[in-house]
Length: 164
Image 1 (cartoon, one colour):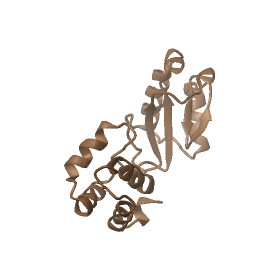
Image 2 (cartoon, one colour):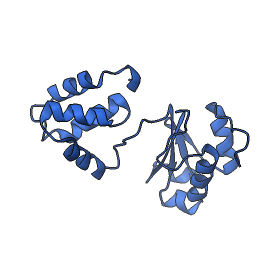
Image 3 (cartoon, one colour):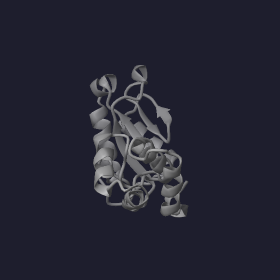
Image 4 (tube, one colour):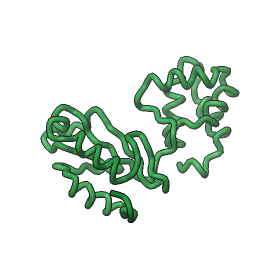
C-alpha cells in the first residue's frame, strides 16, 4: 500500500487488533506497519502509543535495534548493494560510492524526487555473481559503474545536468 493512501490511525488500530498482547507482539506489529506503509512513520509510532500504551520512544528504541526497520519513506525503486564478502572483495564499496554520487544520495537515503532509495545490505546470497545489486528485487550481476548507469536508465533515471 502506498503511504499516501493509508489512514495511519486505522492501519495501526487494525494491526494491533490482530495481537492479543501488544507488548509481546511489538516486533511483528512494527513489521506489519512497515509492510503496509513502507517504513515506520512518526505518526504510526504515535498511533501505536495511543492504541497500546507502549510509548513511541520505547517502540522506536526497539525498532532501531533491528536493521530491518526504516524510518524514512522509501523511494519508488529500492536499490540494494550487496556488501557480503565476495562482493566486498570485488569492489562493492566502489559501486556503492558511485551510486551515491550518481543518484546524489547517501546510503539509506532517497532521491529528492522519491524515485530511488539506496541501501547497503550484508548479503544477497548471490556470491558467485558478485558484485551484485538489486533493484526492486531483480538481481544484477557483475556490476560495474558503467553497468550501474545502464541499470538505472532501465528504471527511468536520467542524470541531471551539472552532476559530476
